[in-house]
Length: 417
Image 1: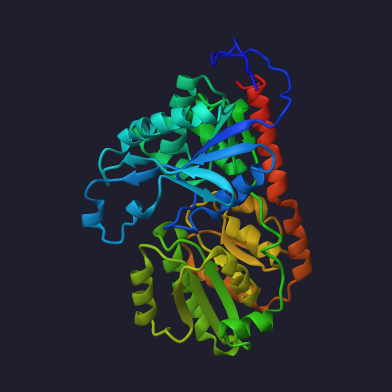
Image 2: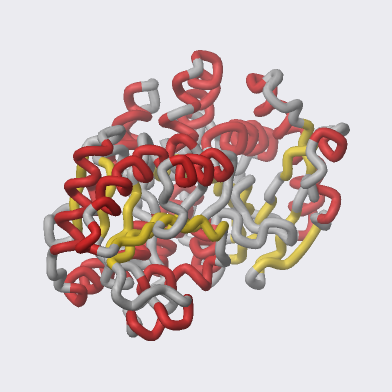
């Protein structure tokens, strides 16, 4: 397919006719599974899998690399990731980029860019991509914008949450993020709250489209609670609270354990808390549980494969996400698809999807007493689970991919800013 060249300068954009075949799209993102991290960014994997049904798509997923990383971290398995692989039927490339831990973060964007130039040129030689779709603001979208200028390709960027909410607090990174997004032809935001934050840091509002993530309703759906509890060896008489996510400070887990101590003190409810996930806080959380003598009712079994999470969802009475900061967590949409109510902090885009008391409860973050009360209220309430499940139907990966592809098509045809 032969394409006319066009300028990236505003006001001099050449319109194109509708392409006669699906576009070829190169996705650039560090958020993609690989052989050593098969559960990494499952939401991106699901989105790209659906998008690949609408266009020709390849993924470049650079992996951070440091010469002495294997010495500093014996768990490092970067060397086990091949340079090229196939993930969910998508050809995926894994170039390495130099990243010195905790040093020179303002250089990550440039180092990321240098690592993708040659692989991108090789990919383009055989797969003449029409557009670039970058997800994660920095360094991914920053580097992808430089590549788009070099190759004169339209670019669509997507932001997720932490990449804006946290990274934009640092002056230089904020400037680089603003540069990247203002030089993207279109920016996809997963929530209105994230859109508003981008506008605050200087991103032009006309570039931004809010597109909520989806949920896999074939995987996440209601099943028999007693049956899955027996399979997971969970007492069928217990009231079960579930957390699923990364065990890191921003998830508010220390507040959850403090709040649950008050719930557990009410012996009539016979409650249990399951924390599914892994991360830097795991040991601290386990110590917190021991210090409060709750080993018999708080369980931290580690991370689980994504396809196992629906069983845990269906085994619980309520999902809790007491985060201090968020985008739009897919775990909430997945809980809704299973007909499970949610207790969550009123941060980021969460209030945009948890919109009714029929779906759960919103509360201020960092308040264990308010969290305790909300959990008790939700454990005592009889929920209309079919209503909750039906609400999740509006969040579909197919619908999400169709919108994304239309946005890519739009910028390819010369309708970008």
